[in-house]
Image (cartoon, rainbow, N blue to C red; front, top):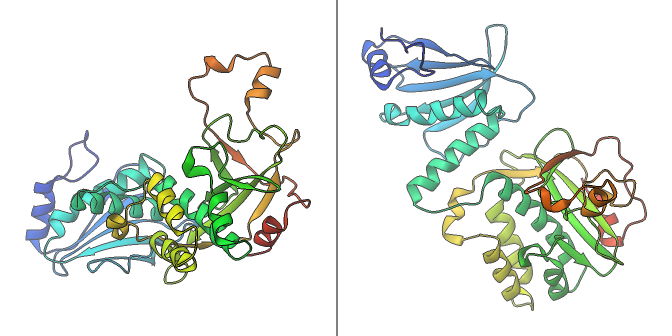
Length: 327
């Protein structure tokens, strides 16, 4: 059999062809960490990517006809499997290589690697641009909160409070103060902060961080397009519908790319709300100045904050306290 050269991570297309023509099943290890194996099953016309099961969810691939994922017991342990079946498995092989690279070289979990690679492929085939994974998750959280507000406020007022698409420093502007909405699919309540002004309160206004922990939903939950349609249904024939569409357009949403978003999400835990005050750990222009640092010297400041163990705020507006009670 042909095997990969030492300088290569993956079996070549020619090598894969030899395995398929032989008719015999084979297991090929892809060098790296964590362990990833390519399972070749010529008789079944199936390629399988197999990696140890950690605590990550299995992605929902029900939208695909020839691709599936599941967990199995193998080599005295639990493993994740991605299966591609059919006559065109050789053409799909580069997708499996891309997923293996995302797992081993980019340290992504199985579900994130699979969904990301498949979404990139769909985008390529569609010839259309899609939101990045982080943008998709972030928009999902903002719309989740907007949907909540639509049940609490006049529709036009709720839509007007969504300020992020307008380039404002904070995502939502309530009468009682501003809200920065953060969403994550990690098991820990950790969020990326992309700018030093993101967690700096506007003068004279309070600021809260609303934290959503999301997880893959399988057949439940909702996809981003479904959440958008839910909000459209709430706004139908109401003032605010036109403004909502304009804001969706501003954040990069396009209806003709809706089929690129197959990930379904639901809440992993109840939302938590934190007031951004002098005790909250954040990097802001005011704190940089207090430390004697010239903000203009930092071309970009981006950091991840871990909220575990921080005291959630109890003195919050009703629209925030009610969303924090959900879960």
